[in-house]
Image 1: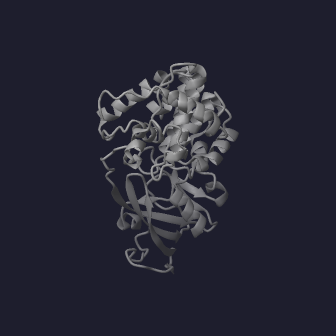
Image 2: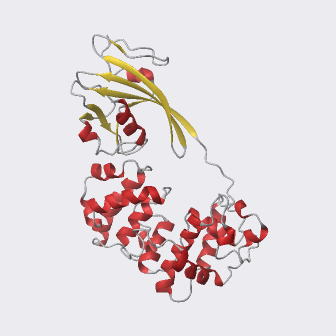
Image 3: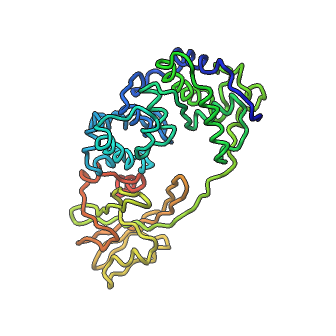
Length: 366
């Protein structure tokens, strides 16, 4: 792509007009300039589908109607309400961000992207979204949908895994922003880019015939829209093996520990987690006999406990695969687990922040 490529002037005006009639205007975080609601939706929508976010968004607003309520909430409650939405660092940052808005800005979100980006969990695109939607700041958003739309419109074929190329795309996006009626045009233009990427300019089999900018879209003219955006660097995946202890006492309560603030499942409640069979064995009395857990086994018992080896499973995270082995056991006293924990009844653990595979285990194995 030529370095002198300029955006076609009608792009912003075309998208604003299209969004007003054909864009998404029914979502609960739209048609509002409340930065708390817009910010909440933007964080939840990161790497998560709209259909999934809807229930969580409503639930959060019921419990935390404003940023001060969220800031004052215990972390465990925030993590519990977030449970199942995934990417839990978002929830931790969400909570800390609310606290910072209260302590640093008197409970009111700053009005510029430059100030918003100083808050935890708010990157350049999220800051721009809040500033654009709520305060009509003339600033470019750049989430995955927007990158796809803009690289196709301009046939921008530079590799976005290279930092300087992504910066160049940001500059082109800034140049393409509306220049008239900014107060009303900016929110609708930003929404139009998101809507176009989510509904028509899809990663595979884009609906080009219905696209409002197909006549000026260079990728459409070339007949290769699916080749954009270009990003060659692939995520390096890794794998880990973990052993989970599913311990119950005579009352049917489950032993759960709170994970450290860093690492896998940070700040969530979890079954005790071990990196090997040997380290799991160490939580039991020395005289207790445990089956060779590397082999398929059925329920068994000893004088001290009943043991059952559950089927192993793989849990896929963004950058790694977790290969999990599970040992279910009946105990009369608390296990010598790696982190501080407690016994929880079903009523109690149902409202805790639990990793999705742990919640699934508890729901299907007790």
